[in-house]
Length: 256
Image 1 (cartoon, helix red, strand yellow):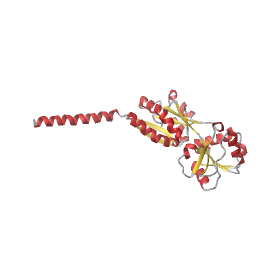
Image 2 (cartoon, helix red, strand yellow; image 1 turned 30 degrees about the vertical axis):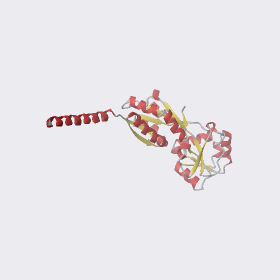
Image 3 (tube, one colour; image 1 turned 60 degrees about the horizontal axis):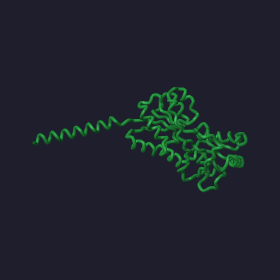
Image 4 (cartoon, one colour; image 1 turned 180 degrees about the vertical axis):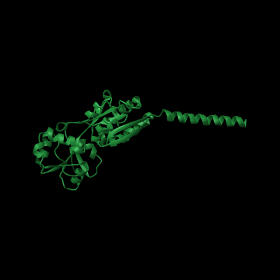
């Protein structure tokens, strides 16, 4: 009887061990490469995806303008979140072009010190007047990231790039916010609303879509994904209603 009891216990231990091993084997790891501005919404979303599927997501966030180079060089992930321009990444063949899915778009903001008078950004014409009437302002340098490219796009779309070139100072995102909070600039054109949503020292006022060209955030499954099905499942989740609600809460424009 004693031997039988030990035998039963041994069988239970082995069964539990095999079950744990099976679960570990069943868990799939999906890698994700995304621009730094996507860190905030993805923090909650990736946890939700893992809880829902049991898969593990390993994410890496890098400066936006480095995305295209890294992916083009074959150093991307199973899922890659791209912000234009990224023609060289697409032409490299490292992205499955057919898998393209737009998540949301960034909204360019005019940023002022917390509590300061809100700039008039009600219409493209109002934005144009705000920029033209300012004695000086700072803007994000296009060489430092996609927010700078988008900010420069505002000036070009409104047709005032030449008119304001002598009174706008191009700086990095951090320097722009420091200039605004330190009183060295009345406002900054850029970064994105989502970049300053939780900043307690500034207010960001999103521009109307007619004042800028939307910066779409597009996800792709890698053509070399270790598990294309799992990667597609992650990308689908990042375009789900739950994901769009998260993007909207941070000041982005959902794709749908």
